Length: 385
Image (tube, rainbow, N blue to C red; front, side):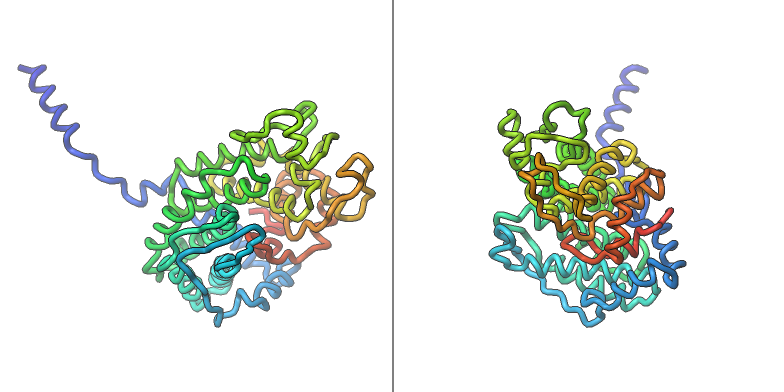
């Protein structure tokens, strides 16, 4: 009878579904707020708003249109983006609104003025009420651009402000409209796409307390960073991006815009232009920064690729002669506000010498706004947190 009774008890136990994990238990492994910026980082900024370089960076944010309390969002159900956002049916509007939500989230935290929290909520609620899809050639990239900024704004508001009634609706849109696109990756496009998408994916994963999505984003980052920035230890050719169709010597050289000489820090898009290359490097750094807030040190894994990539491109951006073997002897500079977060992580936290990168970063302060990059001198310059 005892074996029979034990079997019956086991069957009953298996038939009763386990209670759902509480939000606290699901999110216990993640630290909030923890998408690109942490509470400790922002507390450091808040304590130093009267000193440089934060003072000027703060003034620049406050003077911009994104920071205005009269900002009006322009949501739509279908954001249609063609190549170079042509057609541009909601593409600029969505990116701008996501950046404005982040601007107001930052202002809320740094000032305590809840009008900014309410404005961030208004913007995000407007979008969560209607957005259903992204379409067109640039749909994946657009989803990454907007998703990266929206996840930062949502994370700050949800975990520092108590008046967001529709936070769950916005989270649902992140999970159903944004995450499936960005988490899938983009192995056959230029590398900045997949890195920007991964930036958005890891931010959304943290906000949703989604460990599986977080781990998948980290896996994508590891494969793509190694395939985006070359090190001589890779061998005679760059690494193939996981899942990419470019796997022969000729295909890889074509994918790297005809470059046949490879040196430390060269990137897959170097010979395309520095604007897209800067985006790719910045997005890779963003992923590492968010992971660091969650207790995972991706900088330790990627520091050599990141430091060489920043130094190599910073030198050329500063006017160093272009060697004849590089991109046919001519490059297209224009890095934009891309290296502040990486410089702070590698130079200030890890003590890695980065003289050229430092010159470029300090000359470009305060870093402004570009698609998914916003006010990173304010949030990350000389920030030990």
